[in-house]
Length: 439
Image 1: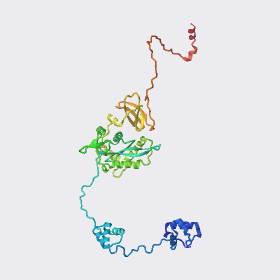
Image 2 (image 1 turned 180 degrees about the horizontal axis):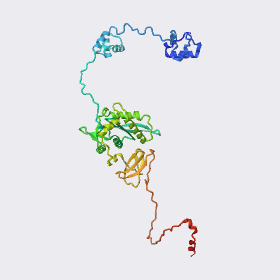
Image 3 (image 1 turned 120 degrees about the horizontal axis):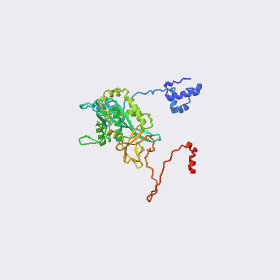
Image 4 (image 1 turned 30 degrees about the horizontal axis):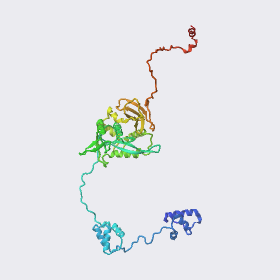
């Protein structure tokens, strides 16, 4: 029995023949192989398998493969086509029309193939040399001179199957790469102020903050191109003591560090992240920032060491003044049933407070409710992150019960004496009480 040469066969045919050899054992013969069964296994027609059997199912190259015809439809017209190519004419439609004027009977495909194979005949295009001008330069700042800030967003899948967006506030030092990240339920202006205050406490207050044209920072630009700041943000800059520089739209080179930080948070910190609540997520984010700030980064070194050695001598420390509390405690309107809403949950306010608004501050898992002028504390709540309302003591007044009053002046007077003290243990031996009764 002749042994098959599997290496020279088609892979599908070789695999099918090998299976048939295992199934038939010694009865297998390559000369008497069942072509119908082999066709069902390989999907090849029986006529083709019969031709392959003549060469023991080995792939044999066609005898005329690689040979080219000595004459084609372009024979005798290549000189005209070469002249067109040397003149810079590479349009196949134009070349075909010129050839047909000379009696060419072929189609456009053969002309396009000839043009593609003879591109060396086409002269190189000539361009006027233009001056390159000044090249772009990367944006560098000194130690503690500028911080960059931006928002990022991620989707959160809740335990009940719902899905919502969470905002990530990111700030980074442009010089050393010291970073700070904090998460909020949304990207409102009040959360921007809270994130900036926390970042300034973590890294210090720089001279400038670089940001894009977000609505909570700038409204528009005047006729001279100067930004018209949002009034609350302008007051915040004066209170903290820093300035803001706006970056050019669609130009990531200016504040690319913070944009890369947002991408790094999504690709590193948030991958596979699970958490209980926003407090738990922010604690993990702060630990992650501390880890990244103490790690070596190529081109930056160790950000925390560089920030301590250079930037810390330039930035100013945030002054926790009385005015700063108003930015950490956003104002909320008290509802008709005595609740303030914060981060999607409602917290009770005592009915003794007569104001229409109150200020709230969440520190970890505790929420504090203050008066609108921050003069006194109204209530304290444990943030359980449940959707049910959180009531406080004395949130509602007790209902008044009906009471009767005298319709005429009261003239009768009685006296009430204090009850004399007595020792109950020896009361049963008080025989004088009986004597007094007999008298």
